[in-house]
Length: 366
Ligand code: ATP
Image (tube, helix red, strand yellow):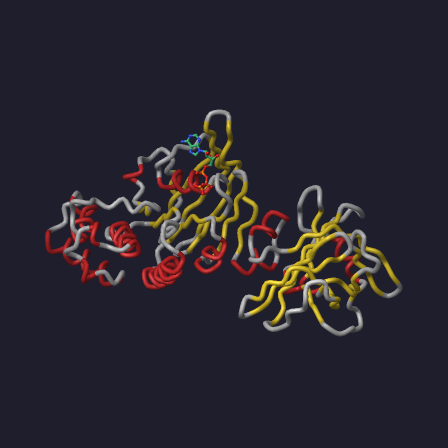
């Protein structure tokens, strides 16, 4: 059972505050992914939990015990870095066994532990090799094996597969997920790759400029982004964000984008929804993922005529940029749709997939 908690954690490097008032509870066996752009403070947070970095204020608790004054070695937490940092003169076996040497375990116990970890990571045939004779993926398996061999309370990983090529990264991602399902240890994993985060996490912690933006399951952060930053950081292609005004029209609401002759039709309850979310009239942004921009070749009720621009046929689906008023909306359509650039098509926003944000604060209005 390992439970990690950060309470009001603050960290400065000189004058610069890189962790701002961070509060987070990580449950036993949870796979947490910390996601955010370069420099947002993910690594510093992870290193602070591991004891490799001090904090200036707040508490870090492991299983209810305050640990920020404990040395890294006394926290019983394992760390895997992006650079595999294996000992080049040792074999794979010796690299994995290394953390157990100082524990006073017998040779037979160490042997059993190394072979068990090697089996789980499928590197048993490589035990006699030296790191220089391993592929990048195998090196990282060995680094993970070395971290896991002493059954740490928690496993912290900082961009562990960031240095691998795209295909290997995908393979290793699956391996890491399988390993977590088998071993079930509390894991905190840092990445700036949102696809990796979505694929691995039980919950994603999204950070920007030292501030925690949202914590939630992959579905939650994708479907209900708390603010504009999360909305645009999660999802590929990114969510369309467009200026919009909402007007009342008979029994409906209309969402009008600047320069557009007509507005998109929404159910009238949109007005109540925005009011409940704290909308102040002007300063609204509409957020719609490309799959929520519905495109048709023929005229249809509730669809507006627009011009197709850049088209990217991607095999499984197509991406089409559409000019709506002065703004561009990106749509994701089924494969083979492919209008000609400049062709007139008909477009509608799916109200069920639309988000609205307050432009000034960035906050989601529902
Ligand atoms: P990346 O993905 O690039 O590693 P990150 O989100 O992990 O980014 P951190 O490495 O935690 O971000 O860095 C947060 C900020 O703190 C950055 O502005 C970085 O330049 C700064 N920083 C990190 N370590 C130090 C240090 N030892 N001294 C001074 N500034 C530092």
